[in-house]
Amino acid sequence: MFDRVRRSTVALVALAFLSGCVAQLPWASDERLASAVYTHAGTKSVTLMTVIANDNGSAGHSALLINASQRVIYDPAGTWSNRRVPERADMLYGITPTMLQYYLDYHARKRFHVVMQTKTLSAEAAETLFRIAIENGASMAGMCANNTSHILSRTPGFAGFPVGLWPKDAVAAFAELPGVTTKRIYQDDEGKDLKS
Image 1 (tube, one colour):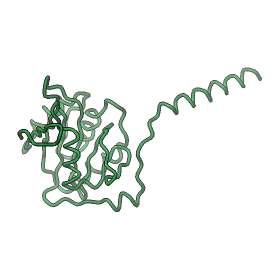
Image 2 (cartoon, one colour):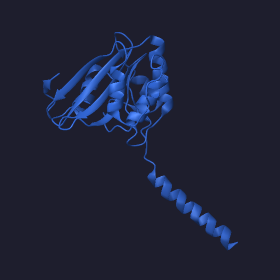
Image 3 (cartoon, one colour):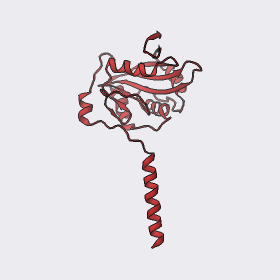
C-alpha cells in the first residue's frame, strides 16, 4: 500500500514538474485565422529568411515566408508578435506587406541583417509547403533551422534538401537551387535602411 502511494506521489510530482517545462503556445481561434487571411498577388513562392550577425557572420534564426493560397510566416520558436497577426503554434497569419515590414524591422537592426532567398513554386507545391508547415506544429527553442530545412525537404522541388541544425547551412543549400533570388536587408535600430 505504501509503495503504491509513494509511486503515485512521485508520478504526480513529476507530472507537475514537466508541465512547468512546457511553454504555453499561442493558439488563435479559427475565427481569428479566417479574419486574417491575406492573399498576396504575384507568383507562388517560398522565401527562406535568415538573421545574420553583422560582426561575425553567425546565423541566429531562420523562418519561411510562404506565399500560397494565403501569405504566412512559418516562424519556428520565433519571438516576434503583433496583435493584428494571429499565431497558431509557429505559424503567423495575415502577412500583409505592412506586417512583413514590421517582421523585418524587428530582425534587421544595427547588429543583424536578414538574408531573404526566394524561390518561385507551383501553386500545388506552395500549398503542399503551407500544409506541411501547419502540420509540423510548434518548434522547440534552437530548432528553427532544423524545422525549416525539414519542411523544405518534404516539399516538391526540394528533394534532397539537407536537414540540419545550422541556419547558415540552409542558406548555402538554398542558394544552390535553380532560380533563387537573394536580397539582404540592412537597417539601423530605428528601421532606417542602410543598404540592400
